Amino acid sequence: MAEATLGGSTEAISATELAEIGLRFEVDGEIATITLDRPERRNAQTFATWSALTRIGDNLPDQVRVVVVRGEGPSFSAGIDLRMFTPEGVPGQGSFGTVAGLGDAAFEQAVAQAQRGFLWLRRPGIVSIAAVQGHAIGAGFQLALSCDLRIVAEDVMFCMKEPALGLVPDLTGTKPLVDIVGVPRAIEICLTARTVGAQEAFRLGLAELVVPGEELPQAVRDLAAALLSTNRDAATATKRLLQGAPGRTLEEQAAAERAEQAVRIRALFASS
Ligand code: ACO
Image 1 (cartoon, protein in one colour):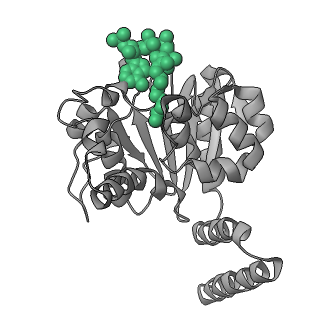
Image 2: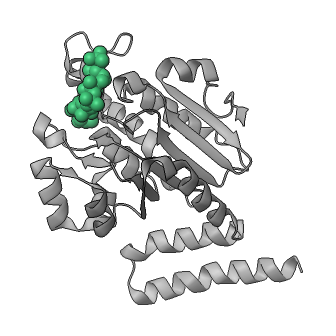
């Protein structure tokens, strides 16, 4: 597996810099793996985590088709680093107190910047898989929700804790949550800040697969291999179609299918 130094449209980020932030990024052929790697803090996330995720997305090597997001240690992620609620904040990164003092435009920009770290995981050209064990709380739950698919260990504990802390979930998690479980169940899960375990997550569609913890890495490898077995351009076009379907009428979706298929069939015959 290659250790990556990222360059490109945004500033380069080295493996050393990522390690300081508590992340690893590895590319193995068409599969990239992002590892939250601060198990001693249960992979708590900071502003730096989200900017680094954005930079990884901005510089993703072209050959990558599958992105795996995983966490080192017993928990996927215990959410936001609770030091951000203290006056001192996270060294070098400030705190929510700093953000609260921003004007409207700067506040909007700061949150939008954090959200960019999550949004790219939905790009049509890739399939993102969250491999989730143990706690996935708040920002951790939202990071898992920002991926296309979730494979979970039997000990998974999803919790949208933000409302219990006086916040709303704002790291792009509310839309996928509602899309998957519907508004009433999303209200119940978020406004009680309760824990959703593996079997319920599977039943609700929050997890595509539940496996014993020790089988999680192999289950992710198997799914990645299956995803890579299809034609890349057709997979991208199909994901785009599926993503657009909820916002279209049946007739509009049929038209979108025709438009995508015209490109596919012409490309197939042009290359034969
Ligand atoms: N931020 C900073 N440090 C954390 C966080 C966090 N979110 N979560 C855990 N840690 C640290 C603990 O302080 C502890 O540090 P220490 O060893 O120096 O005492 C270490 O990680 C291990 O944590 P434990 O609580 O001992 O681990 P345990 O496995 O028993 O519990 C659990 C894990 C349930 C995740 C617990 O740590 C917890 O509740 N964390 C806070 C979760 C939270 O409220 N997150 C914010 C959600 S809201 C949002 O994300 C927007």
